[in-house]
Image 1 (cartoon, rainbow, N blue to C red):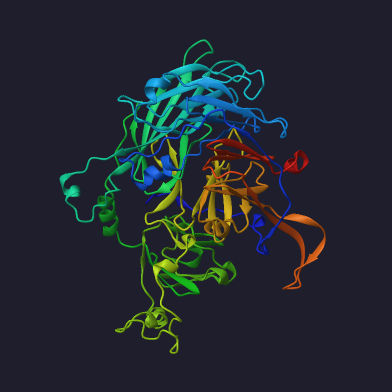
Image 2: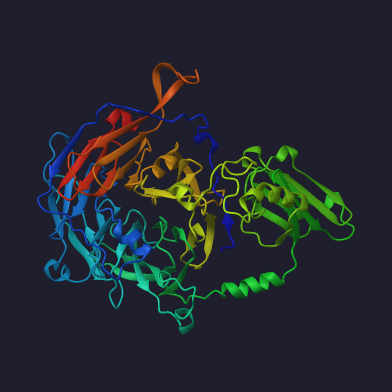
Length: 615
């Protein structure tokens, strides 16, 4: 789908191949709560918000917001449109959340069709708030979290667009304006990503199409607003407005710290369709691009078995071995002619064993043999990620092996060998036997970095086989991290172009067996981790909170009774049960505490003490 696909580089030192599972700990965690003076503002989906995109964005809203600059402070919006603040200094003395700001025109706006109000903290003294009716606020929040902090004041108020669109805040970040140095106060630029879903008008041909799906006529729009003020005395103004369009609701969306680009993860393609400062060049239709690519002669042909791949190139007459440069690494391949173009280069679909991979030149035929890793012997759909210049041929012997292996799955009779007497399956199988963790998205899923100046995708990664688990903020001055399933583990990736490598995602942490654990929680509503990644937490829709800690050393060696192996580290699992049956409306995590918001109470669970959280 994109011409700049790369692969996620896993840091092997963060993987634990010897992980043996979590041990249930019966140690009770301190748990405190306060009653809410009034209920939480919750907007239910309307009848016209029936697509899966509406449910993903608006139906699973986290109504609790953590202040990353003051991790002991959380916020929520009550039924009277008051922004309420709770700061925990002593766990055993939790005061009632106090009102810090009231959204204007609550009486008239709350009666309209709207979305949930949402907010984000791009800086230690600024808040971006959307009221869900189409109006956006930039608020001054001086000394947030202090007991004597003044009420928030409005720095800027305006509509997202004309006509007004109902939207939620997906992300906001603060950057200095280029014309001011750090020493000059007041010059600031705030980038906001606002998310809404629109119903796309269909053409007559699309409406009459038999294959038309009623959900596909919804599109996701990300409004990218840049608000700037030149000095502390001047008001904010909208200096730049861009629109990003996609077919599906994004799993992740954030503005890069520099304000140059956005990171997006989700199904389908995302592209900039409007820019207030420069015209957007529309790309040619995929069908036109595909037809042109189909007319090209293949650069190489390739075939494969379960153990290896063979690539064949045709080189110019008279080419010598000294004229060819083949570079093989475990995850990359480069085949080049000296003083000529590269025949093939880029990240490989899977890792190879370089020690038994080779190449040979016979006349004009150059053959490159790639040996698959023993633990990754599967059929590859492509050699280099995103490359379409090769032509694949099925090896006849390999086709025969596959046919023989699958022959028992086809028959003129219904389940002719139910007990497996003739080597068939032991029982009939159906889709109901598949678990949630076995399912993959129907559409192409990817993570991209979309440049706001060139309107082009500079980096992309295919995550079609990596289930999204959650997003988490590790550093208040960076974009949130995204956690993806890799095999049974959960790997946390921090977006941001890495100097010297060009990669846009950095492997920050690993949560052992989290993908497997999360798939077993059928009632899971929220998942997260703290900035120090010392644990992960999952919570059900009602009452139950599950905590999974990183491995910790034992005081003395412990022996596994089944295997006899000496264990020096143990990963603890803990369960917290809330003493109410109210729906959980929000969850946030800090290094020391977990905050849980229900319709009537706000819970504080002490997970780590100060010394544990900082080590």
